[in-house]
Image: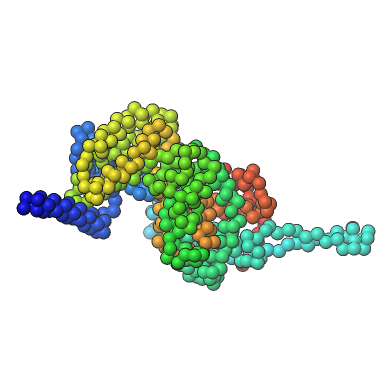
Length: 509
């Protein structure tokens, strides 16, 4: 009888654990569905540590840069008119005159000054025009008198982006800007173009995007070669859908991989690569030639890179799991590891403008002690393995070696959020595009996203950079060498750079 009672008590204890786990899951999913999505921590919540007064009141979240956080919320400074409208906007002055320049006594008035009444911002809708490009034919009368033959010489027009097509540099730049920067899919752009006076089809502009991306393929590969030579990189991957892939059903997942420079790198590039799977073999081909430090999440596919690549972890992934655990119940409960992680990120925000060498010294002198306290708690805690907190603890334990590597490298960021921001741009677009019809379309997306996000990473206007590339790359030799292509990498671009093949234009009204 006693054995039966013990068995029953064990079963009851197991059932209680399962009920607790299920209740936590229900509370967590309810908050995810109906609650706020931000990971910001309420500043009124006190820390479990006396020396830590909620320094992480506005924590980082997926796809966002680590932001500066204050214990007390500060009032946001009011933006001035000059801060809203930049100096590139054309200013037009309108002076309101009196209908009659006579005083009540009939005497003539003389203007003595003007007073600003208000400012208004005006918009002029875009307009299309059709350019007809002619070449001029010349002959030499003197040579004709000498031998009786007509010697004709003809001017040469610059190469077209696409032969026998209406596609121009400005039109393609606008299509790419709308799709990859604003997230407007091609089919939703058609009505805008029709209102402007041209009735395009989705197939036509899709073919333009794909064909012109193939012109950018050599520069795309050149950017990858430059990246794998850098000492530190970040990596991430996300699923995408490609309808027509050999041997796969329409809804099968493919993947877009991203490889990018760390934020402290002077020459920053962002490289997207389309892959049919998430297999480690694709990671191996993507990082071929790279022998530095790679910061990524805990995905095992990167293990195939071997000892030639040093893996470092991402503390944002760790913190996100502990934040979810703290926020999974009916009320937010700050845990000791979350408080320590908050302090780590607070330190990193304070040091983000320091040189890699100084950051490394600060990490070894200050972050190391926080890490010791963090791992002591992790080693001593006893939690339900399937609870949110249990999953966070297991994740941290599994990534311990790669997470600790970051202490010895001041060039690597404390989190992998820079690459996640690049992925977030793709994910926002993916919600609108839904899928790529073909593998060629998916590869074109990777090429254009690479050029646009690399421009952003270097602080230059993506549209200006694309226009510059579209005017110059088609004029290069068919088999351009690395030296020719290197001049067009984003960090070598300067606004107002000389453009090959500029020609005089006349617009016929």
